[in-house]
Image 1 (cartoon, rainbow, N blue to C red):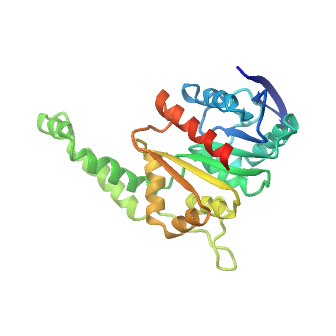
Image 2: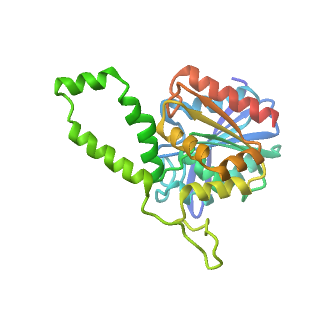
Image 3: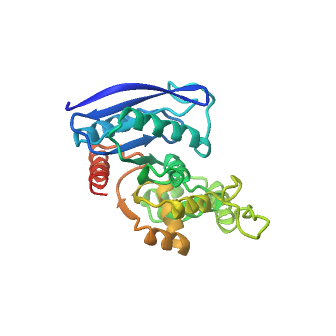
Amino acid sequence: MNFQEQALRFHCRGDWLYGILNIPQSSSARGVLIIVGGPQYRVGSHRQFVLLARYLAERGIPVMRFDFRGMGDSDGEMRTFEHVGEDLRSAVNVFFDACPFLKDIVVWGLCDAASAALFYAHQDQRISGLVLLNPWVRTEQGIAKAYLKHYYLQRLLEPEFWQKLLSGKFNPLLSIWSLYEFGRNSLWSGKEPVVSEDGGESLCDLTAPLPERMLDGMKRFQGKILVITSGNDLTAREFLDLVDSSKPWQATMRTKQTELFHMENANHTFSTREWRDQVAELTANRVLSW
């Protein structure tokens, strides 16, 4: 290996956080901070974040990955992706302290880590780019539409579905009820936008719709953005459906010159070596060229 791999320990609001730093022998002035989504820690599913960090370091890119408070080895109480801004700022601070040659960094996040990155990035001028994989924009209405469009309609075209139905191994009443529920939710989510006193939506309020808060974060961010999506994943499908149906999202992604790269056969965590390597190469190429 032509890089050093070392452990880090740093404070956030009185709690100790732990991470791993990969420093190449000959480093670029732009680093990558890998942040973790969902209930997992800095290794990632199928060692995804370990392998990504080492690949990037081999390409001369310094990389840091760490555990949020309450996850992995870090102290403190577990919190959701909407409440990790202080953790991110502490991590960025220690990354720059450990690598004083850095001029800026790119934040890399999968699923709700991508959402957390959009919430935070515009607040920190040291962040020059974002790599967002299968961003989490979950709403009752959005997931209902995704199920209807990408699951139920597809099932009707599968011979296996009709074989189960004709053989009596399939309960159509349960599926009809489930389909009705998804159809009802896709038309009305039961939630109204939060309106501020001046008549505009209060996007900083956590009760405001998640997609609108994420769009606000994207509008405010001044750096480059690469979005990578999977074809075999409902989270990705929900995000793509949102963009396809929303002129504000389309306009913002166009204005920000956001690049969208779609991997049709990949699953949510890009679990095969082929998909993982493709994500790593895309990430390295953008980080080095931005």
